[in-house]
Image (cartoon, rainbow, N blue to C red; front, side):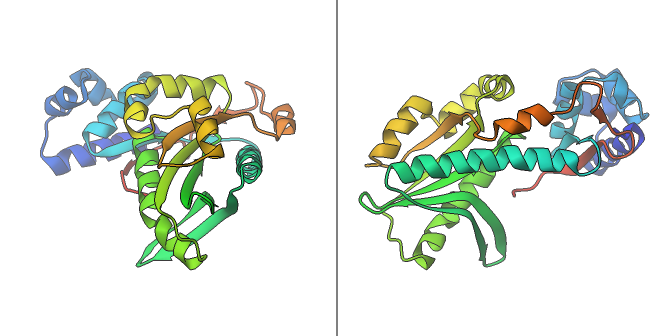
Length: 250
């Protein structure tokens, strides 16, 4: 984590809004002393929750990056993600879905990809699947899913599919971290993606109507667990760790 850069970012965003430290503290629900310490480059003495609250009050978000053995961590995360994508694709095909992993789009300047795009030819149901091996910022995640669901009919038409409904599915790994995050954001997820694993599996076999839900799956890539970093192997980089960035829709 780079506490000096983080502090400079908080101060710059606060001054841009014309707020005092007291005003920012009130809006973030933290003490003025916490804001002052953050701006003085003493963020390491504050909790992640406090930093996240300050950033959110400024219309930004705080992100902490963990760096480990060069690109090895990226490969580890990619393997976990790929394992979940494989499991989703297998499950969908078993229920008669046509599956397109990593369906890319570039529609009037909106670019990106859908982890899994699926179509049920009998029910003419279109499904947008977002796969996450780790649960990121929840608001940004849901905004990204909504955007992809909006663009999904365009992707479907390009493949000759004629859907009558569009559904959204978030797939997470079956681990304690993901379940804890689900519990933390239960109210938000209940509103945006109300269906859960049992109901989702039932729906996949007969998608008669649109659905929005969360499916928790074990990854088939169990070998990746053997290569996880030990607690002493991974640390938070002091050079590129935390950055406050303006929030944006993916």
